[in-house]
Length: 252
Length: 386
Image (cartoon, rainbow over all chains, first blue to last red; front, side):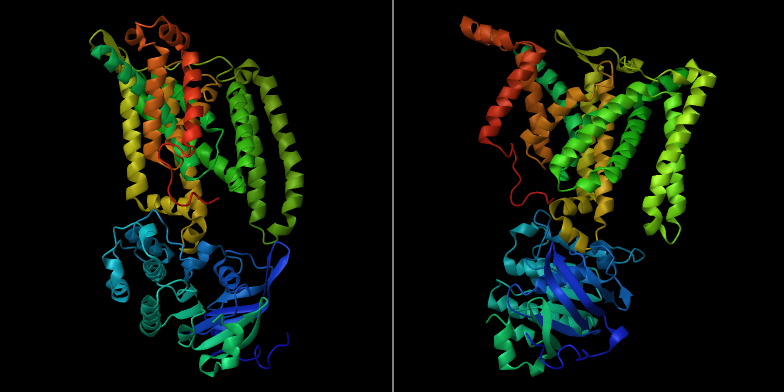
């Protein structure tokens, strides 16, 4: 596979040390199998970056590595200029990464309220931890307000997805990492989630790293990276996404 | 008839409350965390010995104090065993998460070490261990402040281990030769030690033709108190919420910013501390020896397994049920009901000793688990992550 010209050299909106998230020459293994092959990518502050690619090319692995769930063999991960490659997942969360994993991972036998309160854990130690859920969460996801005392595991897929995003936002993250937030969710709720993510970026100015298959959502992003066989093979602004690239990298 | 029924229920609950108190810590360590801690019984034993030490200390203080030593002993037992549990988690168990077989073997080894420790600990022994820890870990701490710690770590351990071992051996031998018997005499020895209940716990509450021993009433009250405390801690505090989150989904909890290692250590320490409280209670019932823990470990695991791993309510019901069945069978309380059939009478007679009642209960448990392998209150959905 030859790299399309300019794919790796293209500077993604903002250079070097200004990036919110900066991955350089990242290599990750599952045991002996080489999953991520020298990945370079970046997410600029306040921007939304979308990672596309067919199933099994390593998108989720990349996000898990950013979150510290998988160890990096070589290469570096920087959050706002600070290296986090040796930090544990909980340290990374407290440094400002909000993670919404594939399959949502709502804690099943805790109430919706408790699930939301767990989001507060990511706030830095000094900041006062109030036990209230800010109203902006319910402005974004009104459905959660009526469900506070329900068990997390009893919610529908779409509600769980909204809860997962709300939970990540409770920690006031600088970077929001979303892994296929529209997977297996009915179309009307996909639009709601899309609108919510757009509002989050506009109002809070946080950066978003998104893995997505849903084309409409992909187009909301500022920049895309396309993955194949564990490496980045193309990137560019999403408004330049050609039909060819879409057909090649999106499982539509 | 009613009286013997009441008697059966009270004695059963009384046996069950000891079981439950012993199992409560395990319900947290094994039930919530999924760690098979074979040293749980020995933590109880340590709690019982702590009670013995506190009792002797308060005896020396004199009249008004020695009556209330038990409350201080409860606190001391909790703290001592929680610290030992913390050490066990940080030193052994945390390296073995997700590997139940290795955990079982390692904690079993720890249980043997603790038993032998109690038998042979003397001033000489304690001084030796103290000197060793001071030298070895002190040196490691000094070295760990150097920037090149990672590189020289292996070498440092290779040098410091035999060196501090030799020094501590020499020191303890010198001590032994200088002070002779005064320092070589074991603190507790292999014989059992006796804790005497404070005055106000002796005697009993008359109930019909029977007496309810105050110690039993005390243990039932203590069990209820511990249950409420655990329930409150798990459901009403921030750390409780963290523990519940981590036990249900460890990796996601970490991704939310919960310090999972601290949560593990704390959970294990609390479970161990409860074992210490149970040990304190058990010491009121009979003499305590280094083998005390062994006689409880199987029963406590049974309670947790029958109740349904991860469910505190299940443990309560299971402990009460096992307690009542063993008492009713062991004391042959059902004999008057089957006077019509000599065969049934003979059968009940056969099981009417403490050890045969245990056989009967375990046989019932084996049959029960054939039909309900997940226990009385099975966990719905996904189980605890490794």
